[in-house]
Amino acid sequence: MPNVSVMSDARDSNPHTEYAATIPQLRSVVPDDALLLPDHEHPFTGLAATIIQIAEHHAKS
Image 1 (cartoon, rainbow, N blue to C red):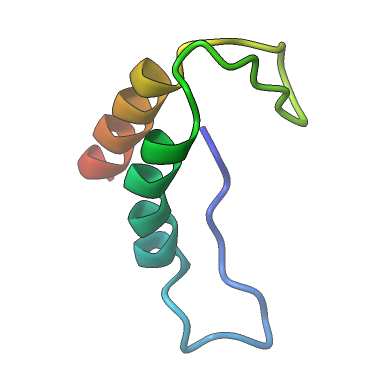
Image 2: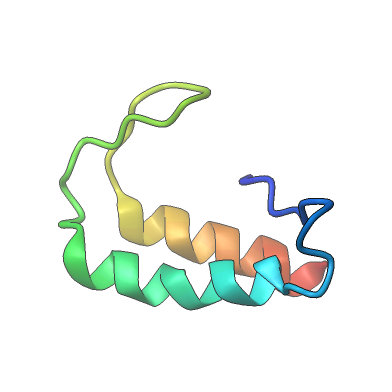
C-alpha cells in the first residue's frame, strides 16, 4: 500500500484526504489495461482493482 504521510513542514495538511481525492481522478484518466510501473514491487495492470483494494485498506484504517 502507498505510504501517505505528513512532512515536518506541513503539519496542518491532510495528505490522506488529498490522496483519497486523487483516486477517482486516476481511475478516470488511466486505462485499466495500462502497464503501471511502481517504484517498488513489480509492474502490473488492473488499476481499477488496485484502486478498490487501496480504498478498502484505507477505509479500515
